[in-house]
Image (cartoon, rainbow over all chains, first blue to last red; front, side, top):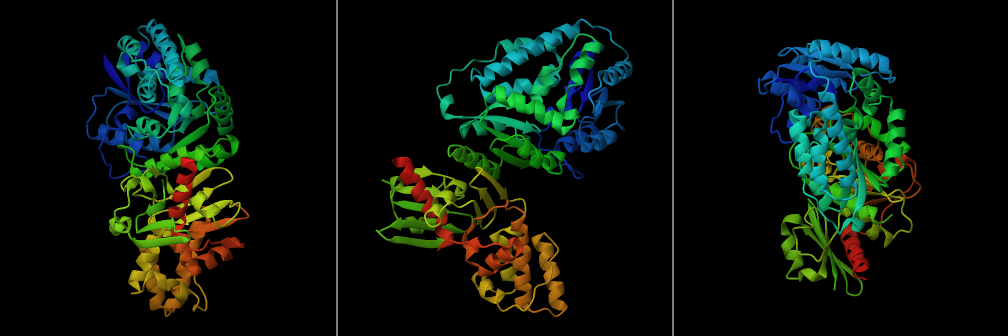
Length: 313
Length: 233
């Protein structure tokens, strides 16, 4: 099976149906010790360098051009010098007809759909991921382990059936300490530090919502039309008001106490921080990361201070 | 029973206790063991970068201890600005929000140390020198090293050291001011708050009074003690 690198959300239903296995390039970053020379955002610069240095075995690439940041688009264009690439544009206005056309073009790039039945399998895996998300919110599985599976909702680790089997074997936990913890939503980019959820939990911050992984798992469909209808609602591609409205509802459902807004060096999420704070009236901690690795001490200080300060509510 | 509040930060270590009046000692951080002098850990509440390293019964971050410490002297603080050796923390007490600047040294005590060292001065001399200035000039660079280069070129142009120190204070205060939300009662703490040049510059930029408690550098140690006392009750 050929491997398709993806730079952001690309329907795995469609990629598998075209006989490719998706590989989310971002998933190599948090544990990477690469230090790119020319970079703004470490996420995109690191996967770019991996591709430029032939460090990944990819057959093709989808660069999400509309609906992701400009850093990804520039680094994606460089990477496209090495492997055949398709530029996917999500509609800013959420027009499903436009998105259906984009998906048709993408499937042509991948030589057409050869097994549409696999879309049903992917849909059923995503149903399981939604359940997993709910179980994590209730503290039945660890926040860290739950995140690792939810973030894999973008590519199902290249094999939907094997991935589904793994979901059934996630160890259940019973926690007595949840009432002593703060219910926290993680918004913005996923943390670039591979132990983030574990460290946050140690400091009394129970993460019950991860914004981007939730986008990965909540969209699905079994035909191009259904996929277009669902993915047109991808909030990161829409205007900020649309995204904040969606978040307001979701955070309310999950009864969160506070927000951690994860941003990156040279990232548009830094600019959005003020608007997010104004719109979502929760105590908010903004983290500004740069390179991957374990959570650095100065961020641990912020997490610890945030946990303390939340008890003063 | 907790009897001591200890703040070991990036630059200095502070210990406070009540015997029954407030007593305190300050030393360099690398000498923190000397000020503890065998005090058992169950009598110590700790804060600062070394809070988990030094012996302690209860530890808290400087964000929390600043709130407790300031309230010892000032009622209803709205915003607390804590200028530390290597970072600056701004806490909005009303909203339970805080921001920390540590990506760059330009708004921290380290910047002033750097400048003082260049001129062969003690950082504690800067306050007095500031008040001998006749005017200030704009220092445009936000990076400490480039700001010093700019200062050197102004020195070559014939500006006095006094004017340049006051100008640096102004540039420093401008950087801090960007972090401060609108509020009616701003409190400045940390060792740098003893520098009246910084306070005067901040007041000029923000066009309002800046409150400074007595002994601003021991506020976090005092706050650690008060926080721990509350926890123990």
